[in-house]
Length: 113
Image 1 (cartoon, rainbow, N blue to C red):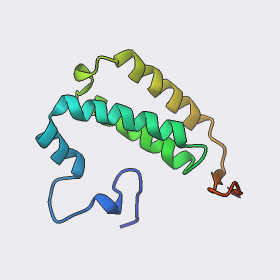
Image 2: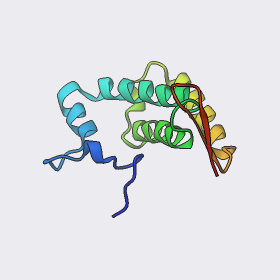
Image 3: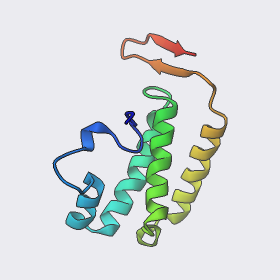
């Protein structure tokens, strides 16, 4: 099985049949997880140019889809914000170049074709 940092990151695999986000839903409730997902989507959009490029946009989309697929959007007061965020992420993913740009902490830019 190939490694997938977006849909099944290794660092969230553990000795349980539950994924971390499911344990969070049980522990903190659906509303908290909905807001967590919205904030994480925003974080990945915010940093994508400086860290992991397209992978971060795909992670942002994953969190937005998690909200929708699990009917958690009813818990969000900022539903318009989620739809706007979804539109921005989707547009950036559609227009993403075929290369990834990574900016290191010392300012060096790497371009991977």
